Image (cartoon, rainbow, N blue to C red; front, side):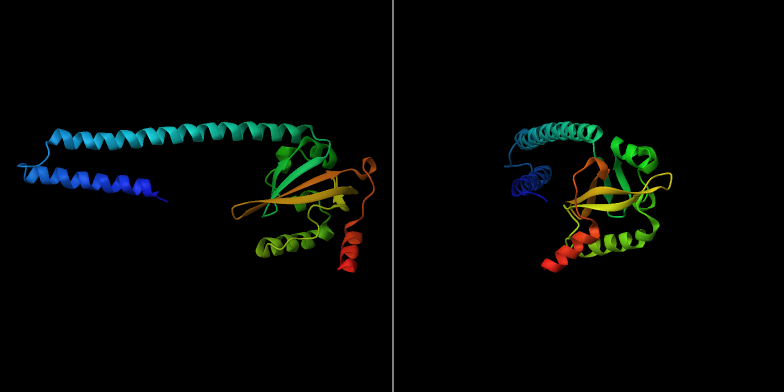
Length: 205
């Protein structure tokens, strides 16, 4: 969106164009052409310096963001827990080494595929898909977010086991991104199952 300052500069440039046209048609008693051109250059130089300063700030910000991204990826790569990112369509966007070890799928195999097809037992996939669609459509917070629970999961070889899972989400403009931290419950502290948690929340409510 144009700023008031930009609008003012554009108006001044329009005025310069009008003045140049008048100079071409009626040169008598009008400012000398070099003066008019100099005023043009003053405006352009001022605008160019501002654009250069803004570009330098954007480059610096991009470098800062890239460093932060590098730090975040380093944490994910070394995390003990499996860390998985999923978009609003249910497709995997990130799959860390701990997720490879836990589920058997490599990051290359998992990225871009539907998460449900990889780790959710078939009998729960329709429920997962319906819940995801409902949340994306309504934006209503689910009781499963930011809570730790035990859920059934699948390995690449088809073996079913129970994992301890915490699910959260972020939102970038109108796009949701979901993340999950998962661990083998043998290595973790006790926590309720999904059914137990939902039952407790319904009883308390």
